[in-house]
Image (cartoon, rainbow, N blue to C red; front, top):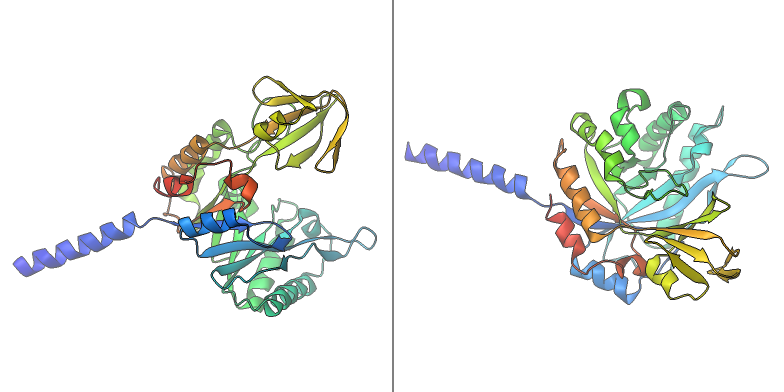
Amino acid sequence: MIKRFYVGLLVFLLISCGKNEKPIVAFYYWKTIFKLSETEKEVLQDNEVSKLYIRYFDIGLHPQTKDPIPVSPVRFLESTDKFDIVPVVFIQNKVMLQSHPDIDDLAQKTIHLIEEINTKNKIVCQEIQIDCDWTLKSKDNYLKFIERFKKLSHKKLSATIRLHQVKYFRKTKIPNVDSGVLMYYNIGTIAPDSLNSIYSKKIAQRYLQSLKKYPLHLDFALPIYSWAVHIRNQKVIGLRSKLNSSELSKDANFEKMGTIYFKVKQSNYKNGVFYEKNDLLKTESISSEDLKEMAHDLDDNLAQAPKEIIFYDLDEFNIKNHEKNIFKQVISCF
């Protein structure tokens, strides 16, 4: 009887420990040149990060021939030996919207370029991730591509998943991958109004309960970036990365108008972009409180606990806008 009690207790403790295992911290790296700054190295070390998801290249369409082509492949200027590298390939949806794409050729060429980059930089990867916001119209081509890619690559395969693809998965279908990463950002609409397009709790709530029914294991990607929506004559003309309220407040060419808006006082160039007098910039960013709220809301609606929380993206500008221990705080919410 006593022996059974201790065996039962041991099983209970093992199950409990499994449930309490926290996800690891990982990062997306989305620059065309891989070279870590001291600040970036410090955050990786402080959070015991061993895994990086590095964008290897995009796939777009040639302007004249409309054939799929690689866009801006990454260049490595330092070793990645300390990290488990997951190559990420972003496929523009227009590639999958073509009427008769050569799926087999596209899969082979994509794998070949990944292998070429890996060989050149002495990288051995166990997993590849495909990033594509496929739609109902591009679904069939995309799903065929995933099938072919998985068969040819002989690697673990993951795919990015959006909230609408979770809620309506019976229509959008589920790619044949080993796991998915829910991109929990870019939830709203980019517009001149005062709403934050990066994250809206109100909009997210419409989709969150669907997570419990989604049959594919999901890890989560959370945003740490900021940008500004460039507005002219009440119309959005572009997104300006690596801009926030603090950055614009230092520039005499911009005048703060309320909490999130800045007005261009005089025409000028900033970071290579021309701003016309009276243009508006709407700053959008994510606070530490937003990140913890996201984590709590996701945790409340889980089907399975995530193994990883991947922050987008690893960049000194983004890191400096958050408190040092925010990543561990977010992980503790799960």
